[in-house]
Length: 266
Length: 337
Image (cartoon, rainbow over all chains, first blue to last red; front, side, top):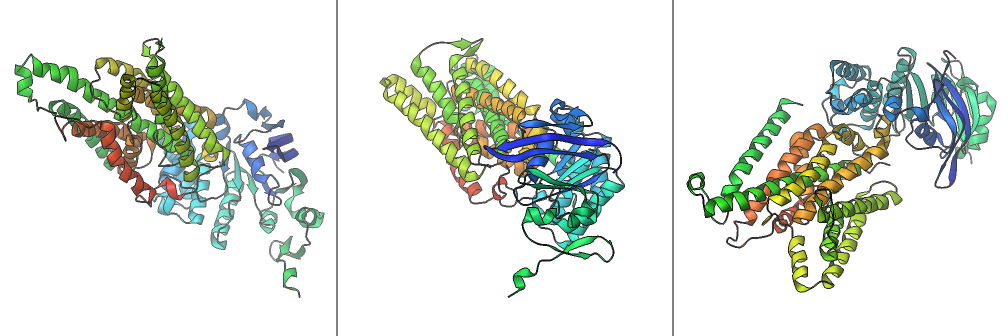
C-alpha cells in the first residue's frame, strides 16, 4: 500500500427494482493502488463501479473521493477525477477512433471552446500509449473486439483522471490482446501512477497483477486483502461453491489456480 | 473538421441561400425579377405577401424538424427515432386540434395558444414514449417503434374522435391542416414559429457535445461527465419546442426529421458539431424544395407538402429498415442500457 485513501465507501447499500444488489459495502482504495474486484456473476461488481461513477444512485451509505463526498461533485468534476470503461458489448459506437478518444476530453471543455492543443496532446498521448495510432482514422464499428477495447481505454486515459474503473477489460479477448491490455494497465498503474480498480472473472489474472483483491458475493464484501492471499484464504471455495487446486507459478512464485479437470473424471 | 466536411457545409449553405432566393419566383405563375421590379400591383402582392412568407416558413419548419429528428436519434440511439415515428408529431397535432376544437382562447405572452398547446402535448408524448422504452430495458428498435406507434394511434384516435364531434367546417379545417402544409400562412405564422425555433435550436446548438456523448450510451456519457438525466430533459424540451411550433402552424409534416439528419450523417459524419448545422440547412432547403414541387406539379392545384414528404419518406424509411446504410447505422448495434 502506498499513499493515502483516495476512495472510500462506507456501508454502501444499493437496490435495483426492490432487489438488494450491494449490501453494506465498505472498502478503501489508496492512491496508486491496483485493486481487482472479483466475485460470482450477479455479485454486484458492475453495480459497485456504476455507483462509484454516479451512473446509478445508491440508497444509503457514502462514497468519498479524497475525503470529499461524491454527492457534492458535479458529474464533470467527478469525470475529471474518475474514468470508467464499461463492460464490452456490441453496441454501435459512432465516430472514428480519434473522435471517440476526443470524447474523453469532455470534462475539460466548456460549451463554446474548441479543443485546444493540450486536449489534442492528451488524445495523441493516449493513442500512442495504447498503440492504437495505426487505426486512429478508422471507424469504431470496423474494429475487432480487442482493438475496440484498447480504444475504450485510450478514451478513458485521455480523460486525465487519477482513478480508472474498468469492467472486465479483457473479457472475450484472445490471449494476445489480453496480455497487451494487462501490460497497458500495469504501465498506467506503475509508471503513470493512476489508481486502477478492475473487475475480472480471471482469478489468476487478479493474483498475478498483484495489489489487493476485493471479493464480492451477493452484494457483501467477503475478502479485501492482498491478491496473493486469495488462494490460501478459502474465500474462493466459499463464494464459488466448488473446490480449487493450486500450483505454484514457476516464474511469479505465487500460487495460482490450475484448470478444473473434475468433469473429465468418470 | 476536415476540409472535405467544411466544403460540404459551405456548399450546403450556398445551396440553401440559392434555393431561398429562387423559390419565391417559382410557382403557378413564374415571376421574373424584372417583372417584380416593374410591377407594383398583383405580381408584387403575390410575391411578397404569399410566396416569400411561405418559403420562409417552409425553411424554418424543415430546419426545425430536421434538428429535432437529429436530437431524437442521438438520445434514443436509433436512426428511426423521429418526431413522426415516436408519436411526438401526433401528440403535438392533438394539442393543436384540441385547442381548435375547444375554442378556449388563450395565449402565453405573445405566443398563440394553439402552439403552446401543441408544445405541451409534444412534451407529454415524449415523456410517454421515453417512459415506455424505459420499462423494457434498453432502446431496442422494436420496443421504440411499438411505443411510438401506440402513442401515434392513441393520439390519432383522439383527433378522430374530436373530428367526429365537430361540425363540417371545423372538421374540414382539421383534416386539411393534418395533411401538413406551409401555404396561405402569412407573416404572423413566421412570428409564431421564430421563438419556438430560436429557443429549441438554441438549446440544441449549445448541447452538441452532450449529444455526441449521449449517442454513445448513457453509461459512457455519465462516465465522461455528462449529467445524463438533466441533459436529456433539456433536449426533450428543445425537441418539443421545435416539433410543437412547427406542427401547430404547418400540421404534421412527415419524415423530414428522419431523412435530413440521416443523409447529412452520410455527408459530414456523425459528430454533432457538423451534423447539426448540416441537418438544419438540409432540412430547411429540402422542405422548401418539396413545397415548390407541391405547388407546381399539378398546378394550378396544389398538393399538400406533407403528402410529398410522406411519398418520399416512406420508401426511404423502408430502405433504412432493410439496412440500406448497413455499415454506418445505429440499427445494427444493440441498444445500450
